[in-house]
Amino acid sequence: MNKADTKKSYSISDWPDTEDLLKRLYRLANELPIHQIKRDKMQEYMNHFDTKCAKSKEMTNRAKELIPGGVQHNLAFNYPFPLAITKAEGAYLWDVDGNRYIDFLQAGGPTLLGSNYKPVQEKVIEVIKESGPVTGLFHEYELKLAELIHSHMPSVEMFRMLMSGTEACMAAVRAARTFTGKKYVIKIGGAYHGWSDQFVFGMRVPGVGPLDAHGIPAGCYQFTQEVFPNDLEALQKRMEENEQDGGTAAVFLEPLGPESGTRPVLPDYNKNVRELCDRFGTLLVFDEVVTGFRVGLGGAQGYFNVKPDLTVFGKCVAGGYPGAGGVGGRKDVMLCYAAGLGGGPGGKRAMVGGTLSANPLSCAAGYFCIKAIEETGAHLKAGAAGDRLTKGLADMFDRLKLPFVAFNHGSICHMETGAAMLMDIKNPNIFKEVGARKKVMEEMGAALMAEGIITLAGSRLYCSMADTDDVIDDALARFERVFKHIEIKKD
Ligand SMILES: Cc1ncc(COP(=O)(O)O)c(C=O)c1O
Image (cartoon, rainbow, N blue to C red; front, side):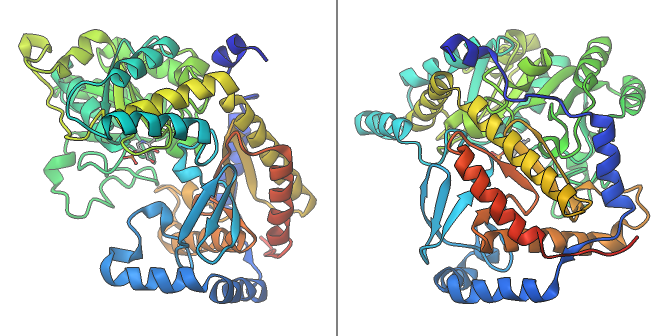
């Protein structure tokens, strides 16, 4: 494949039949009994952790004394206890006890080239040998990264680098309000846009509003609203109502659907939201923290051919290195962040800051990572691995007569078993069942880990360029060792 092909193409080979998929997903979450791993097998897996992961257990038990919950990051909080990882390379991770794992967590998404990809690592080391990781002053790689992103995503006329996706979402809200002078922000229920005060709202489960907003005064999310995924009518109604009360500054969405497409969008959804935003003078913000560069160099916006006003970046934007966040978009809106005097309407400025933002390390890592994706077609290779993995899982579920659902959008793969991520507030059993469903997911993650596979919370799998056919086939054999031991309950 030549370079021009890798630049233009996207990792999603076929958009799944969303209506059929949603039916199967909601049936799993709302109608079917919960299926778990047989108890004797689960006990075997628990014994495995005690004997084969003893050093991790000891270390993370000690960590509990000094680190709340024993780990510094939610992704690392695994059942029955977190693993201490010492080495990462390509498709694999190794723990402190010497166990090797196929890595489908991929650090939550950024390592599309595979873990610890040497050609990028070497270039990053050269840059920091010269300038150190930070000077506080302008560095060439800030410009190179902005130019490169602009070349792949024309909607990104200007780019502001920040330290995380959370910060970038906060910054996007601020610019949207400064620019439009409007007040409300509408998000799609279940989506994650980081953990800022205004976005701990309608997280994971659509319709829950501020259920997780402990420690956040109600005023902080007073102007955040959520609508159900794929419900355009509700979105339009909200926007109409808001017109009488200060207007809608922005609609935020993850373009594949909430939680990286766990509840996938209907094919025309993004285009229809674009039209609504145009009608109401509202900015459309795409949160491409996960999809940016992973779906393709043009992002999900290129795949759907829908132009957002602002795009939020994270993860791949710093190539799997720290300091991964940024906002890009229309020049007139982006000028609200102008350093010195603000360039927003009436000279207003949307304040953003960050001592370490846009440091040479993050910018060089992002630049060389995106260059490497261009050269290798990593998004396409990872997408093909995602297709092979998902097809293998779906065939396995059919063969073993399991009602579970596997689907993917390129390298972003979903494997729903307990379906905890698919419940919603309209389900009358939600509070009765959510605990049991979460437990099934947790146990699934643990069983797979004991079989040498690391997932995101037992239900999401990111593939990388390092996932060759052999890696995927080996993984599928390991999945089968777990799925053979599901206790089937009757309806
Ligand atoms: C879609 C989306 N937006 C925002 C964020 C927040 O990014 P960060 O963890 O860098 O703050 C995440 C993190 O997983 C995400 O998946």
